[in-house]
Amino acid sequence: MVLYTYPEIELIGYILLPYYELNNVMYGDRLITHGDYTYIFGRKEDDSTWHIPYAHLARTEVGNLLGDWGSFIMEVSGQLILKHPQG
Image (tube, rainbow, N blue to C red):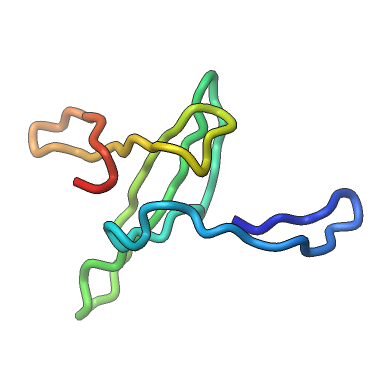
């Protein structure tokens, strides 16, 4: 996550988002806050032949980007379940 001043938009610094070292997902492509949660979109390149990035979605409580996340995964049955990003 990159931090900037506003309105000057000068670089302050950056913070590495959690979980990349656990599951190699590059989180932070997009962030959306809805209700009590922030949804963090990410991608992981699992296909080394075709270089197709697979989408990932995690969520955390608003204001908790550096805390504990839950991660959505799609099951074969089509049900969306919540699973920790480590798993």
